[in-house]
Image (cartoon, rainbow, N blue to C red; front, side, top):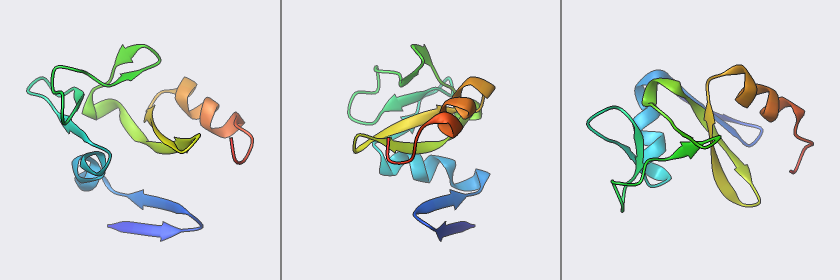
Length: 85
């Protein structure tokens, strides 16, 4: 199920890969997020590769998508950011 409300898209677990594909990201054979056009390039979050199981969502920063990891550090960063940043 997907819900769009107040500029936020919320989606369930089954749509993770579909949502990532919209941003040019696919999953490699080991479960890591990689660039669709350059599958040897793993997506890095906080300088570390991220697994699909760790993916929490996408937010926009300076007009570019930012991948969020489902750990407390990423979530605190999301909450602490001033609106529009």
